[in-house]
Length: 281
Image (cartoon, rainbow, N blue to C red):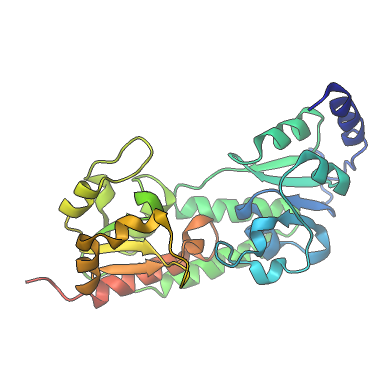
């Protein structure tokens, strides 16, 4: 960004409302979300007139669980100029996205809440409460946590500790120690990724996936009529055979992507698939 533009931007940012500055109890009234996971929590917890903008991803039902709620709300692509023009008094961002914009906003003292990636269900609960508190609606956070817990309590965990292997597009899997792994374990299953090889990007070689002999192979639920090269592995004869044996289960990626009450749907579907699985002789 040119020096003059940076100076002008800094001057503009310095005039942003300070209603949600550190130490101020007043709830923010002008909120911008800059991350899909932030979008999902903001749209569930904030008053609609609090939300100035969400990301363009929030409106896409293929990856968003709040596409209906996002309809009619302005969207941004996380550009600094877009955010500044809205004059927010709270920006909620992800710890690993739109880093240039977040850096500029923080450097001039704009109030930014950065959300990390929870590693387990307790982390999901904590993040819901964190966002609800920042928005001035802690009671809604407690209600959302209660909804999550009720949905989890309604799940009947797998009666047998079947071995599950998640194969996402381009053969990415769910590594041990993250939220996806916690959801697999909450369903009463064993995450095969803990015992087979992965490269440094988290991808599983075809040979390792085939030799793992998983009881369940968990894949993304793709959109009909929209084939992708990223799903080529799943069309290999080995995995076609697993599908014929009833050893695959499809779960929409949007249920895995972000922390929120929707993660209970992952646990429920995994457990149901495991309990429906006929034991191998």
